Image (cartoon, rainbow, N blue to C red):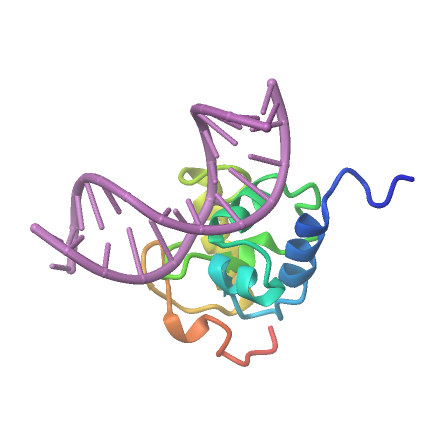
Length: 113
DNA sequence: ACCGTGACGGCGA
DNA sequence: TTCGCCGCCACGG
């Protein structure tokens, strides 16, 4: 019978992991993959790209391992990315350069939003 | 069942 | 430091 919506266990695992990300902190695609022990950054990115729970899952708290913003709403660049950066700043995440998240903000800021 | 694509990551030049 | 290439896993057609 219909086990989950139209999502696979992998997808749910990714969304669940992202949803666990505390406010004021960010995680990386590779870290999510390791967290769920399923797939790699590629698969995680593909999964989030289809994220049906945009506002439910803080996908904007997920950035690249090199500190890049990554993507937002299926876009790797554009206004969406600027929005992502703005949201992260609002969350309390520190930015080093334009489009670059401070490494200290990656699961280590311990801010309470 | 097979191939191509994709919000990535790490290494080499 | 910046640019480019290959490898990785999961999903849709």
